[in-house]
Length: 192
Image (cartoon, rainbow, N blue to C red; front, side, top):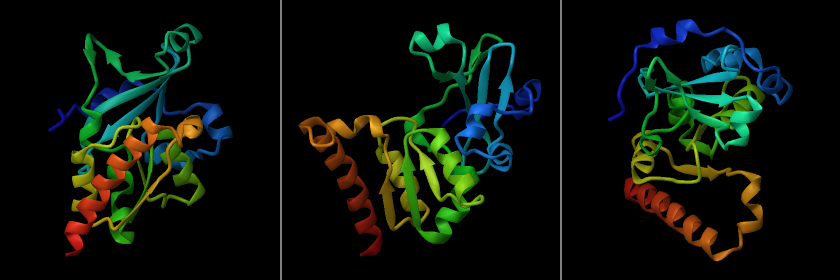
């Protein structure tokens, strides 16, 4: 079970979000819905992660300092006051709190890798994105069980374009088969 952090930590950040995200299709209503903030001192967007009940379980940041991004630290857990605001990403999804009700009602979900994709979909569908992010290319049994507990019957995998050259490679086929088999087995068990 992820640790729960005090949400008042978010009060220290600015209530705004990157203009680049706006230009990519994330509107102000969505940024507010997901609690996106900004830390101008560190030049990073603040991305709160919440569990299904709305508890703050972690905070990731999107760094904009070129030297930090060049080191491969584009997205990292927030480090503040000697504490890392990290969480086990394989035990949850981004967007679970914000989109859970729509997903349960429709019994379907679009799975993406990144938080931004969830927000872009939310803006595009006027607050009803029905999507979650895995925060990477891994899909765990714990995540499968979350979908099952929500009554999901249909899963649409929407992983990043950067892997399209690998789609027909053996490693990708192996990964895709394992993830898909895990979803199908779980969903089949609920319909029998």
